[in-house]
Length: 450
Image (cartoon, rainbow, N blue to C red):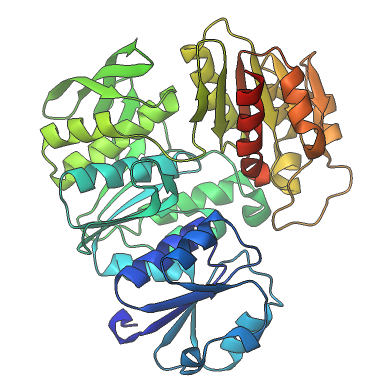
């Protein structure tokens, strides 16, 4: 399919983080872009401010006249859209070209030099570090991010169209539409078992992804994963490794050993060994692409992070408030490691909203173990996202499994009062549901209290 012949692009689910990045991309490339989403959000507001038309009622009557030409219109939808969606049914039944978001990304990567980041954790942060490095090195790059970059206040970095940087998402096996030149796999922990059934099927899909590289392509894998490629790791024997780690003023200072040289005294400002690992693989991919070492070092030092990935909202001597998207036990462990490394001896409160009934059921013991490490835990009800409830799988069922003495189930309406009553020095909100919408209220209440 030739994207040049397309004049109009219509998005069903335009408010999604990955969908809105594509919408911005087509808008920047002179296409007429519009879309539907279920509810207004900061993302849809930002799109409307760009001049992109968005409506919130699922009815064909809302479609602009120019969309009625099926020859020059592309319709993009997200797998999260229900099967009985009226607009989607109309387009499917009326001869339009209707593609999933991942298929459209696949088309874009086919025609560009593509760097793809795969893995069950770390994709968004790694992609945004890599996009930032490439941009600082003035590569003609488009980077599609699964989060809002703090450096660009956007989920799209646009400096040209010859090179693409993308997240290779294993959900729904959508990463198998990509054709990367350089790719990495950061992790292969069991997840999305509602799609895959069991962990071995998930692992198989990563092997399939490894075979999607263009001829002569390069694959990086985190040291220890059961797939062959160039390895990377922290303080171990890998092709690329971080050595001599120090913490100075809340930042990591370290050396990187590459196959050809040693880069000394690099600086990176995101806490947590998992983020240091993300920085390392972004550096390795940029080196492989051919970016100059000096520019890479400069870019790493100026990288500010992604919203909702260990985002500081209050950072004072007596009170710290951090918000993070962690929604898998391994991600919660990574957040815990980062907090304990940066704030040894401090009392830490974690407020967690589980995401999906199936994920809560599949990893209940691991969630209980990872959450029990904090000094105090508050648990919100499970955020259903695309799922219906599963009998017996509730937040109180998860709470019972936790060994923490200071644990409680709370409602959103009670959240502010409970947080204000806590004596914790470090407060965390964690989860991938709508807990992110509570952040500004918590911040306001804590600032007022202080």
